[in-house]
Image (cartoon, rainbow, N blue to C red):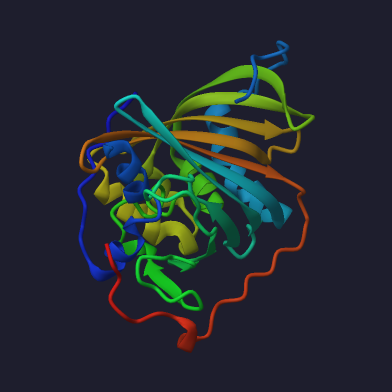
Amino acid sequence: MVVHQHRRRRGRAGEAVLAVGVAAAVAVMSGCGGPASGDDRPPADPAETVRAAADLLAKAGSAQARTAMEMASGGTRVTIRGEGGVDFKNRMGQLLVMLPADAAGKDEHRPITELLVPGALYMKNRGAGVPDDKWVRVDTTTLADGNLVTGGATDPVAAAELLRGAQEVTYVGETEVGGTKVRHYRGTTDIARAARSASPQVKGALEAAAKGFGKDTVPFDVYLDEEGRMRKVRHRFTYVNNGVIDVSSTTLLYGFGTPVTVVLPASGDIYAGKIAE
């Protein structure tokens, strides 16, 4: 596991999002694919094949997505799950994020609706003093991790764009994901390198992550279908926030072509008050 030293940059927007992902996990912590099934001929350049995945998703247009972010510290594990749709062409998406039952010391939590758009994250049912009918808006370019970890789900667009920095990639073999034949690749990606090659809509967030993590190298496993589209990716981060937290972030894509519509909240529906810790 490569350890990434995370340097937090505090700001009003950063404080607004902290409790959704990492801080939620810290609260409770303080108290996928199978083996290769064949020896299919690997591509001549596995790294180049993986780096092309983001462009192929943009051509595919849209897809349904499931996310899982597992955080582990001191033998305790919590998992935050999400489900929704992503418009890869316009780099937008919507997820319903489910917090663990005891992540904030309570038995039940209302799901958080997250709108993922270039440069910003909108959250509803954020809690922590935010009225139920209001949204919180966070500039993801101000987050020290570029919202790769903090929001409780890695933006599926960013998860794909992060592969643009793929290096030291090996072809593992064939397997299946959701009944679809896929090719499994394993390697590491460099956040700064990915940021340099990223689409303009995602570049700012990845540039923030490249500065926020002490080391840029992130191990990954990715599964591409016969058209080269990403069906599943798992990134493994190590986040330093009141202790070391190992984070495994998984994104699963299916239902390509399913229409995805993201409607941003009106300015009057965005909470401008103080965000409780």
